[in-house]
Image 1: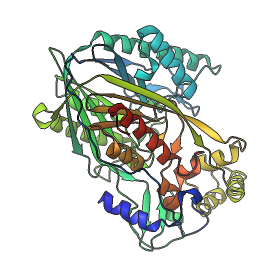
Image 2: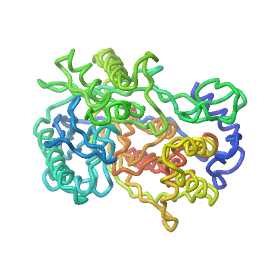
Image 3: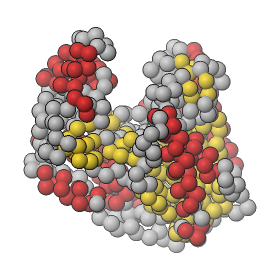
Image 4: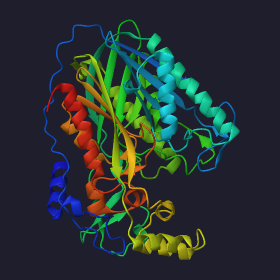
Length: 494
């Protein structure tokens, strides 16, 4: 079905990506089009060379909850209560010569300057090179975004604590390294996530949050496209030690933050872990956030309140994992030598039109929360005040933003590190085009850079992510090309 939708989208696109622009948010016709230059997703899937060495895997999970509460979140809200702790999980892999560290942390994201500092500290304390380290955030909005010292004594103290926690997690995972076999499998998460776009009977599109104010009165006939509903699973079967399960799924977290703004929770990642580990004593589970910049959770039963949504989806994911992770259900893969690469990609910055800047300033000039402001936001198709604030505050002299991209591979497994909220379309392009049997797309990894929308988001859908990003149309697909280049280079594929 996804392939059919992609073909239909391609038929809508008639102009070159060179001329693509953000949709005219003042018009009912959001189907302005262009021909995508997204990379061809050749399905080579090369086998790993036979590996004769001993492959080892280690695990550590440390509590990174601030030692002092209340604690400030990035938006200024003081978190005063802990619903469930937040953790940093580190998985160490060793091929007999090199070690790589794969982290998942229960945080919204990590600022770029802080991310670099963490890598350097971990390298100094463990001797693992920075290109062999990936730190991925689950994008949990209920937690905190660590930043370099900003003068807030309490936040700065926690940042120091977090640095030590990450180092300790690495040391413990390395100390836990144990001979391991590698198994892989997938399962479907049908109905558990949805793309934040509706398509109307008249062919126009709308974004969630503005449905009541739509100019188009044509009925909504369904989502604009399908979410990536594949959950990937890796099981490391370890000799005489607890097995480790890594999962990678594509859905935006943060369902708890609006209903419980002063409570700390690790969101659905906690319930994924709890649902599996609470019933099984032979596995540790680590949840890694996938491409999800345009996807929200979908509660299995509509009557559930928002704050229950993430719990129910987390439990449902945990049940799927528990039903899939038995070794007899999985495919054994070859381990292999660790390969890694990083690159700094200079993404072209989008320049908002004078009209769009004027619209943003007009909205911000009105009293915040007033009916007049809400009506104008509907007219100009702003889903939240965050978008006009971003547009009005941008530095027009900036031409590029640096994106730190990374790739690590061993045997038949690969991992890419994207420092932004990637759309699932682009995540699927990486997974489909990768020469590896399994490729985990890790987002909010490498320093927070916000949204990098897909080509069709600019040329067809428009909306929240397009208004909130600084990155120009077509850059997401170029970064996909860069990830695939690194992975194919590992395999010796030109």
